Length: 569
Image (tube, rainbow, N blue to C red):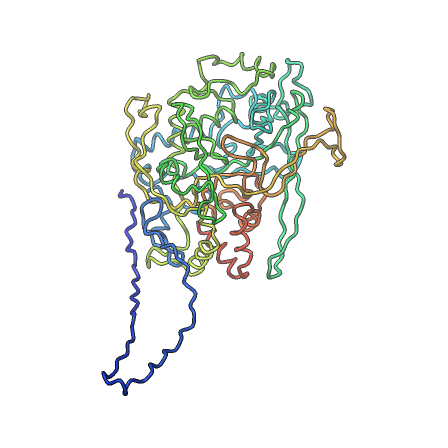
């Protein structure tokens, strides 16, 4: 199938300014000379300020998109990976080119099976037993419905004030011990206050839960709204207290599709969008997250996870297997136990695979990597393919999105380079071979993900306190003394790599309007606080404050158009 390319003509406007000059003459006779008439004095003019010419190429070398008129190919959001599925399978379907190739379809099916199937040798501590346990239907996870329900498809990252790991709990709370998934007694692996301190009994690390404070607000036109402000609380620490300067970041699992395309956007093109010092004074100062490739050891552009901590799909997949499920690979060989967790280490030593004998083979890892890379991207809605026209509501909403400044971070369009095969090797029916072939369906595509993959400061700050269940202050490690984190704005207070406690990677928006079709209980933003797309916009702050205010200044009808556009993505 041919890659989709855009060829548009730039219209050059030329203005010609005519200049005129007036002169006078007279007779050579002295007595006929008359005094010259003074010409009328022209009123003083204010010089026009210099204007910056509109660019003729965008960061990808293409003609810049117009706010007024979408191009027809925008409906092919994922280029050749685009698929036309709008039900609960919208995020978990193979593209046509994969389905039509017997060999590639087999790899996809095998990777899908591994993604969905509970594994052996999980744990000893973990968040879930398989990838699908967090990425529901390959879509977003959900926030537990009550404070007594454990987190099954979201997790809590932790760290000290300088971003380093907690010496006891590491960088992530695993709320289950393996017996929750390997026995019929699910509750047996839940955390128990100080239950694992003695080093003999293993329980989940801690029990995080979220409560909400309702925040009322209104638009300038008087329309009211209500937001949920999350308060994170943590109880039942099995291994003792956290560090005194601990920070927490609750995160809902994101949708899985599209990552193979995002991985192939040339790094130089993304870096062209970066403006860390806000040199153009537009209030937007996107920064690249530079991270270490765990395989090569090289410093590369981070693209994946909420703070762009990982540079490749493979590293993201292997990291999730290790941290979320307790599965070791050749990339991350250690079990998720810290040196202080003796009970965890003892259980890990009894697994069937220990030491250099990792839980997950390179071929299995390559299959899951392939599955994630080639998952299809849903087509845009609102485009009539027969007449090749966009609906008026979507077109107007798109214009409001552009004019409000949203595309300063949510860059609509990118191109991809040639997509190499897995660094683990070329998949075959039974093994991995050298010299992997490029993945054609991901190569040289024009895509519309609406992200710049950069870090942006979204404002806010956080404070961690110790409180009793009724809100009174406490200062002990007693069971009833909870850890409580309250944040202003979208901040989480957690430093990760180059990202500060108020910076987040711009998330891709493709598939946004199908999130709650794939899973009706899904919500939005990193911690799931926003019940609707509109609420997600209203939580924007920091660098996005102006764009949010522009949205709020729109009329109710115009806001509805902008939301219709977002729902078409």
